[in-house]
Length: 496
Image 1 (cartoon, rainbow, N blue to C red):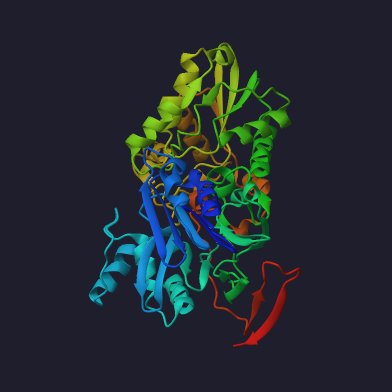
Image 2: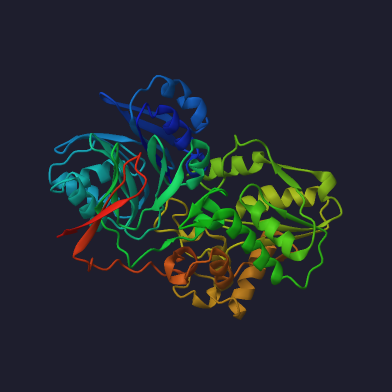
């Protein structure tokens, strides 16, 4: 999942854009990019494979001048894309995953539309989105038609002379939030980008909604779906930053509640130490410690923020290297202790086994009890660039070993009360070489998040796709216009 940020300011926006985009560094590992519009467009893209956003863009931002801009930390391909379209020039950044990208690109090529950017899937997805938008009667019509054409998800920020168009994907999978301070408006995927930049949250953009942000304030250009919002549950469990809020629900608090739920089900083990695998597992571990009354300690510490997440890089070699190097064991905390290890999830299981559990055993752990904060992952994500194959998943490897083949129906393995589920978990525990393994249940995870089950995307655990968005029933839209120096919001109804 890429992180995107945009700002419109009374003065030069470069500093706010620089720091606001940097606060999304936990979401992407491949490329960083910014685009600013002053007298003309200024665009910069850098590879972040072995560098941090701040170090690559510091000199750039000091030489940029413009009052509106967009930025991205990309998980896969180069962004922003610049397009001199029939609606005028614009720059665009996107977040999401388009399953039918190759099919859509082939269709456009047949129609005589060319592509200039080559991505790892043959076509750069953000350029594809830009070309799809260019097929509309205007920008708004183009964004809406793009939403209808793609399979998967796409949220975007589009910068042109009008301002910044912010559009959230139609299922609400990826969040977009608008903030305000006296001299500027901003839009972000992570609310953690707001406090230190002086912004207060003013609006959570609805699924399918399109908002224009400019010097005059914000204006709704197309209404949200209203009847559908199935935001990714994994944002709270793993992906999101602890200080971020989605739909008004804080990430850190959810993770603490997840840990409490895990502890409530652990009445049959005696432990000396509770821990969490840095960084995202720490809050789960803190919740477990608060509920169990056992001390929270740090047997494994992460060496500086310079080592990113081992889950997000596209290559297994890079993931393994990060997993090996970033966590340093503290033998004095580990030796002779029975340890609960809280983790956000078990995806492939290889890094946990080879680079975490092994370090604990090597340092003399007495027992190791692993507690993932979510259920076994059963399906590769359809809306995000993470796992792309069923065969990568630890749970599926267990099922294949137990059955001797890959069964189409795995419903019994998803039932935490079934014998097949118990056998699957026992297989994974043996493979990881841990004393015990106990997963979070879907019900406890949903309760910890605090949203109705139908308002969450749980596809990677249940295999159930978010319901399709229904056609808009309303015959009016709300136009919301807020000026930066205004004291209240004015609304008007416009008949369609």
